[in-house]
Structures are given as C-alpha cells and as structure tokens.
Length: 144
Image (tube, rainbow, N blue to C red; front, side, top):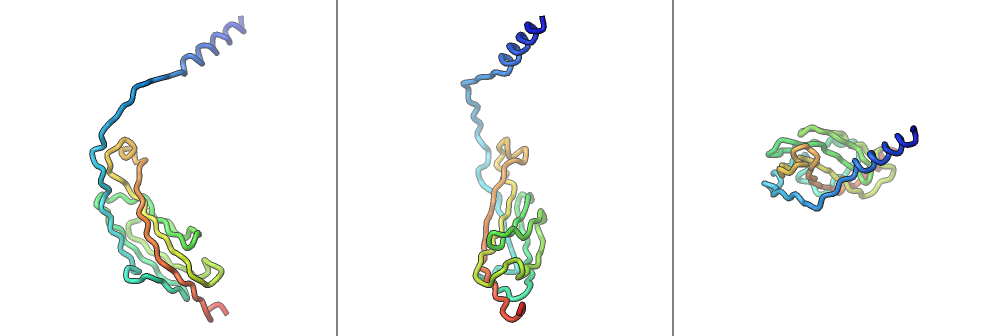
C-alpha cells in the first residue's frame, strides 16, 4: 500500500512539473535610446592627476531620468569607493597603492535604462557609463 502511494506520488510529481511550449512571445520595446547623462568632476580639465598627498575628488551626475543606481571608483584594480548619491566626494589617499608609478582611475556610473522592457520595469536592467583618468602616484619625500 505504501509503495503504491509513493509510486503514484512520484509519477504525479514528475509529470506535473513538465512544461513545453514551441511558441515565442515577441514585444517591441518602445524606447531604445539611453537617457542623457552628464558627469562633472573637479578633475574635468585634467588629463593626468598627480597624487603626492591626499587629494579631494568631487563629482556630480545629472541624468534626465533621475535614476542612478550606483557609482563605483577603482584605482588600478582596487575598489576604493561606492555611492548611490548623484553628488559625492572622496579623499584619494596615496597609501591606497604601495608603489609610486602611473595608474588608471576608473569611474563607473550604473543607471536605469528607461527602455520600457519588462526587465526595465522591474528595475533589473541597467546601463553603464565608464570614464577614466591617468594617475601618477609620486609621494617623493612625503613618506621618507
């Protein structure tokens, strides 16, 4: 009796979980344009940033949709900062890296796409804007 109940349960369980469909559901996405985004920093006029001591980095993001998910900043491959604010600042400390030399500072802005797709409507779709600066770390006499 118990074996037949377990066997019936197994058969019902496996057959009830099977689903197959050969149909596709296509929907046109209403908008394919990404929102306009403007990034302004206190380093806008600099191509190369020379760091001898701590330096203040300030930024402001303007997005026509007004939806910034996160801003991430990397110095070389080191993750040094994250914020979900459209305006913020941080002190870049020369002790983030152990050796003097030339590095790259990358800033990633992750924001809402406003494409109108289903994933956009549930906030699972994003776009990313990358920008970078050359950084020369020259502590010289400061740490000696």
